Image (cartoon, rainbow, N blue to C red; front, side):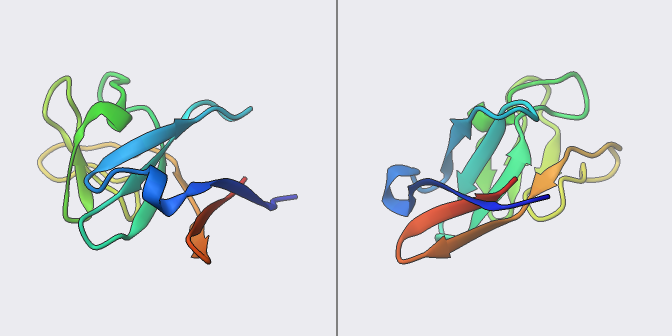
Length: 102
């Protein structure tokens, strides 16, 4: 059974940055882009497990810091020609607070 869990204030996530949440499902990276959209992905690149939370956010994509793979923040899919996928999690913002569905 999934439930919404209060994670962090939106303003505590830097624009074009992320914060990491520890969970029973592994580390989850919460990203904020320049438009204040928030996304959540497993903090592991599908290529070689690099920490996506340390990557560069641009638009609705994060670039893995290890080998430069671009991963969609929307669905966790690697951008062609790379192939692979990382788990996405639902997020919502309510009154400036970010909630994660775990």
